[in-house]
Image 1: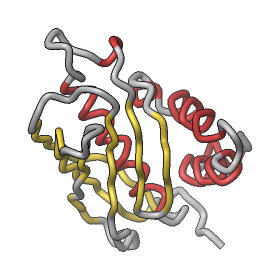
Image 2: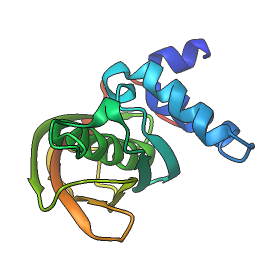
Image 3: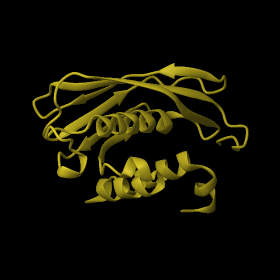
Length: 167
């Protein structure tokens, strides 16, 4: 990562995605690197499949490490997956001069989550020149396309007083 990347994680992640996603295995490499930048997010081992301003699609394999005692994906692994999708969709659309922080989160578990899961988040990028909270929605679907969980993360978005303006 460049010196600029250390000061601006949004720009660094955007550059990493642009460079890696077109390459064979690049999305998997990006997902591993994202997990190193954000260790708790990396703990579930999800793979970013699609990413752009206001949109993220993230896949989670069903495996023992993310399961509960009921042989389904653990509730907090689902919440982590939804938060990852919402944060990526939001952050990739913000200018370098903005920042966002999660201020609230609710989730409904609609059915047992088993098999491969996909979290998808599509949002309109908010005005980042004025600090305000924005609640968005993330749907997590199973292989059959059924919604197993629906999350509502709330992000505080506003100007980053420490970031230089994006050219």
